Amino acid sequence: MSEEHRETGTGWPRPVEPERPSGPAGEPDPRPDAPDPDELSPLAPVEPAPEEDPAEREAVPESEPEPGAVTQPSRARRFSSAGLMIAVLLALLGFTLVVQLKTTSTDPTLAATREEDLVRISSDLDSRERRLRQDIEALEESQRQLRSGEQGRQAALEEATRRADELGILAGTLPAVGPGLEVRFSGPAKAVSSTRILDAVQELRGAGAEAMQIQGADGSAVRVIASTYFVDGAEGDLVVDGRRLTGPFTIMVIGDPATMRTALNIPGGVVASVRDGGGNVTSEDREVVEVSQLHAPIKLDHARPVS
Image (cartoon, one colour):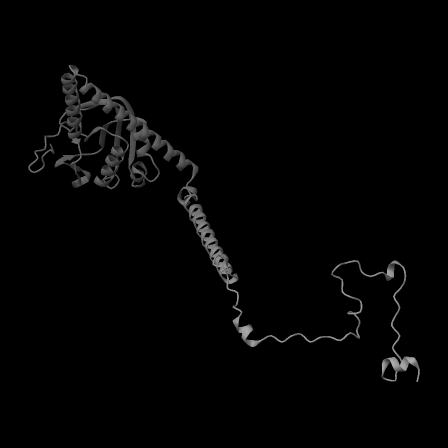
């Protein structure tokens, strides 16, 4: 038996260890914590890891979350609530925009109106606005005069007189004079019936007539006021406030001639209806129209002025 066999004690020769390379590559690792190359050998025995005592494992407490920490589910819940609120606000904003667009849309009635009708409506509104402004200015001037000290009593007397004259003309108790129209109705009884005459009176009032009277062929006349009535009589006569008038009939009216003439000649109006029945209507402008027929004062039994 050789010396090598005796050194191992197994009868087998000692295994040949690999020689470390010489030079820089064979030098040991300069890092202080580097492991020993012999320990990295696959032939080095591996020591078993010490087993952990079950009692010590149970004694170690589990880590609890800190009070200020936010867990993942709560963060997701917060994001979900914020998204829902934003969606609700966007829906409300969209609904508001839709309602506003529908509200500010063009009126279909005005869109379907002809240009001539729109011009006429605009002109009527302008005229009404001018009249109202004039009335406001007159009332303001009257108020200033009534508050002006010594002239107050005289201004109040003049204002009361003016109002009394206006009311007297409207009530038919005072004569009136001014520019206007002379309107003449002629034709068969059907064409110049009480209905046609009443329509003419209403059209003239709507056009701004301030005073009027109607007279027959014999010159007899009746003052037309708010309470005047018209009834068909025998043989084409006309009964106005109980007084019989024979045709043809003439209405003397004070007001703006152009406006009243336009009102009578509107399509389908008084002139058209009388002509369709076989009659005729003529109107003539007058610089001075005299309405001299008076109406008896109306006695009021129940109505009293409010003080």
